Amino acid sequence: MLKDACYSLNQLMVFIMKMERVDFADLQAFLVVLRCRSFKLAAIELGLSSSAISHAIRRVETRLDARLLNRTSRSVSPTALGLEVAEKLSEGFDVISSALDTVNAPGRSRFGVLRLNVFADAAAQLIVPALKAFAEQWPDVRLTVVVEDRPVDITSEGFDAGMRYGHLVPEDMVAVALTDTQRWIVVGSPEYVKRHGVPTTPAELSEHNCLQLLLGNNASFRWEFDGADGVYSMSVPGAITLKDTSTTIAAAIDGIGLAYVLESRVDAELASGSLINVLPSHACQGEPFHMYYSSRRYVHPALRELINIIRRNNGLQTLPDLPDKDPAKES
Image (tube, rainbow, N blue to C red; front, side, top):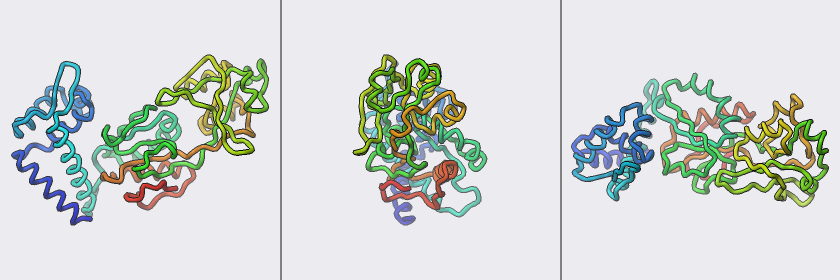
C-alpha cells in the first residue's frame, strides 16, 4: 500500500513541478473555490479575504498559462482543464494525507479539516452529544458540520463523510452503523387527545389531523407501521406540512395534530408527559443511523474516533479500525 502511495505521490510531484512550484496553499484554494463555486464562500471557509483567494487562483492559472475557472458576476464554474487539474489534485492530496498517516511521529494526523454532511435529526441526536468529547480528543482538527436534509453527493461536494439512515446510503459507499434500529411512533399532546380521542389502529388516523412530513427531496412521506404481515405504509390526512422535526414536535406539543417521529427524538417529551405515544403497538422499526464515506478516498483518523464516540454514546461497541474496502454496512 505504501509503495503504491509513493508511486502516486511521485506522479503528483511531477505534475506539480510542471507548474513551477505552485504554492500548496494556492492549489488548496483552487479546490475550495471549485467546490464552493464562489470566491466569497471559499474565502470564508479558508479564513482569507476574497482578494487573497483571487490572487491565489491567478497565480495557479499564470503558472499553467491556462484558464481553470470561468467567472461571471454571479457564478464560478470550471473549464475542462480545470476539472482535470482538480481531479489530479484531489487524488494527490489524498495520497499525501495517507502517506503522512503512515509516519509514526508525535501528533501525526491530529490536524487538518474534517467536513461532514448531516441531516437535522442526526445532528441533534448524535453530533451534539459527541462534540465535547471530540473537541477534547482532537483539538487541532477543524470540524465542519453542514446540517441539511437534501440528498447530497458527499464526494463531489467535498465532504469527508455523511450521515443517513442505512437504506439511504449509496451502494458504492462504506457505511458504519452508529445506533441500533430506530422506532418510529405517532405522538400527540394530552390536549389533542382530550379533544379528539386516541386512534386505536392506523386506519383510524383518517379521522385525525396529522402533521405531514416533507422529505429532503421535497416528496411527501407516507407513514409506516408494523402490521401482522409486516411493515406497510399509508397516506394520512392533514392540512399542515412541515420539513423540520423540531417544528413538527413543537406543533404536536401545541395540540395542532398528531406527529410521526423517531421515539428517540422525543424521549424527553414522552417522559415529561407533554407528548403521548398514541399507537404503541404499531410502532415501526426503522434503519439505524449510519456514517458513510468513500472507499476511494483517504479517511482521516479523527473520523474513526468521532464514529466511536457516537457508538459509545449509543451503547454500541467501538471499532478498532474503519473498513476501507468492503462497502457492506458494518454493525
